[in-house]
Length: 137
Length: 137
DNA sequence: CCTTGACCTAGCGTGCGGTCTAGGTTCTAG
DNA sequence: CTAGAACCTAGACCGCACGCTAGGTCAAGG
Image 1 (cartoon, chains in turn cyan, purple, yellow, green):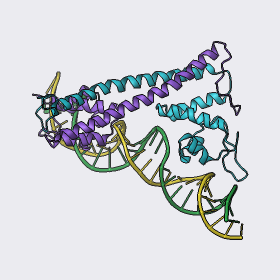
Image 2 (spheres, protein in one colour):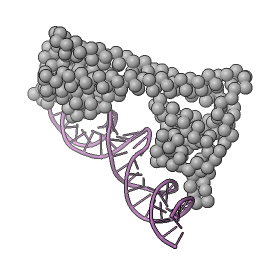
Image 3 (spheres, protein in one colour):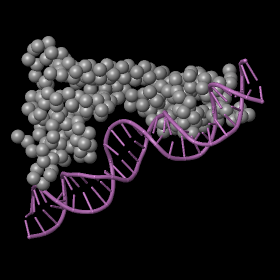
Image 4 (cartoon, chains in turn green, brown, yellow, orange):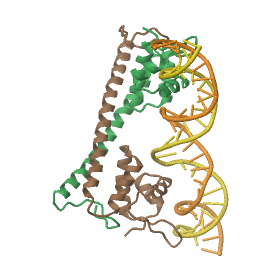
């Protein structure tokens, strides 16, 4: 338990100290982070755990505003679990759909790669872009 | 053939006319887009085809700067196909890795969803976040 | 003590990828 | 011929998610 300074938490979570202060200003924590007599933040492991989840949400492109909403739901205590679930499900849908989009684009890109490889192998590959307007695609 | 005005091209590609002019300023086209006597842009189908590919690249998070580089390679004519291929392969790697990251985050998020569902089903699910600092995770 | 390094607040700056506005000009259907 | 839609340029502006600086304060080792 206790007594983690901001630098340590930054290191543990892979976030910058700037980001941690920014998160706090934005109200993304589950509680007020207590301070030392000198005003320095004192985190607990539970804060780190929460930050790690936030990191996952951020990495999956959840906007700060939505993380904030989720944090507010958690902070306002039990009883709103359906809302939290709805929010998470919504985000899950978004992530799946993003993965699908990326996969679709990936196929196009990979197709281009194959075309170039074939071209470079000496085959008469078509489908390459010419310098100016000689539409060959 | 052709003679497509900017609005038509916007419609065909799903981009805004603002975006098309922005792309032009950024040098993402394969050629100078010709103008009518009155100064209005006249596109061809080949431009649209290129834009569609650019759209795919953008959708897969290729930065404008890299699209620009690719466009420059294509513009500077044959002979640099290996460079183009390298660029595309690089991006392909990025996209795959992004998909993997998203998939990993998705698992965490889906895990949370399952936990909440179980909790709401009346089970004594643990792993939920409590309001203040009662670390239960 | 004193230095050193981590920390504090407030607030401005940055990069990306566009969007929007103002003030006009051009094209086209009737 | 004329109205109205579509187009033009230059440049200001936006939201996001921080990053960075200035100007200090605090804590721990020697």
